[in-house]
Length: 426
Image (cartoon, rainbow, N blue to C red; front, side, top):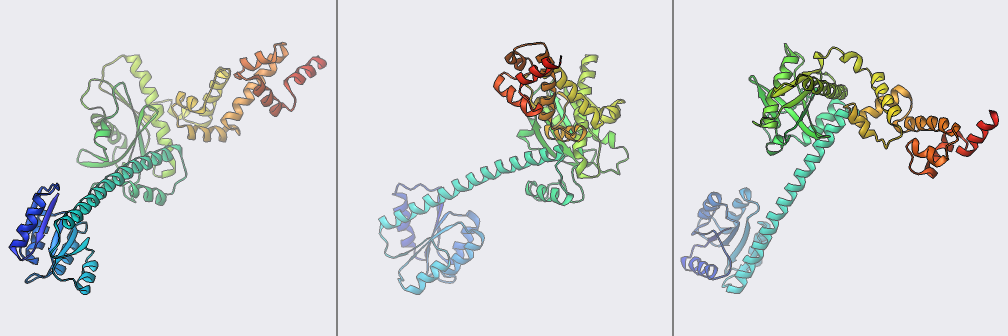
């Protein structure tokens, strides 16, 4: 911490210095100024945290000097020391946002106590700033993560709404990034055996590829890295550009390690609402690439698959095909503990997007459809005269009481009555 003593009398300056140097207070430097103009000059050069300022000095008075210093160092604590105890001086000192106003001759105890209070306030101010910066950093990270999840989930956002959210988490001024006429339009998904943490140490916001700069949003989701960028649709070869972007970004994310990094790339879409499709395509391309790499047993450093390089993509990506994949999964695993997140991971889709597509194609929510499958399977098992508790267990309900409630909600009758009615009919 630095302190500046401004007084036109050398004896007073030296006396204050002796009091401070013999006190428990520690300063990196104690500066001296014999005039208001010199005080302003030293304050500008050294940025002292505390200034002891005499009011009556030749040339620029202490109050005028304090006003000027406050313009470029608003956080500086200024303590006026003067032989003038008049009210008008005190009033001007308050207007200058002075920390205190002490009338000379001031006692050593009063001076030290006042400076100690200033030091404590400065320390508290620094700690509060650091805490606020940390909170702001964590908040920005959370906002960025939430925004990426919104985009890949297909949440309805207008270009204007997206731009407003991007501005909140934008990098410092001057750093190339997204703009209102250059919003995210493509998704890349990364997977690797190595730690995908290179992006954390250097929060990559843009990357240069062949003299062109590409803005980036990167977040970790389900052990994969999801990257959103913006590639001009006017690019002569969008696919080649996106592959070059993936290769350059992989070098930053995975460093120079020997592990292979797998990358799936979706298509470029001109509207924000379709960005979730690019994410789904990137995930499917990644899944296809992993299978192809396993079959080849090669040792390529980067295994990059663009969705347009997969012939079967158009059939595979149709919404009803996605729904059919989920139905097949439920038919084969209905007797197990199943969650939407687990099923979404099995088909490399975002849970929210999968839930939306499934409801659109089947008319049922994921959980309702699973319940219907389990109830239909239970009906067949009830025909076999199995105990209700065993039927519940075999269709994925460890709690038979819960199963009975579900069964009645769906069929309108209890499991026992259903069995009786079937027996009576037969």
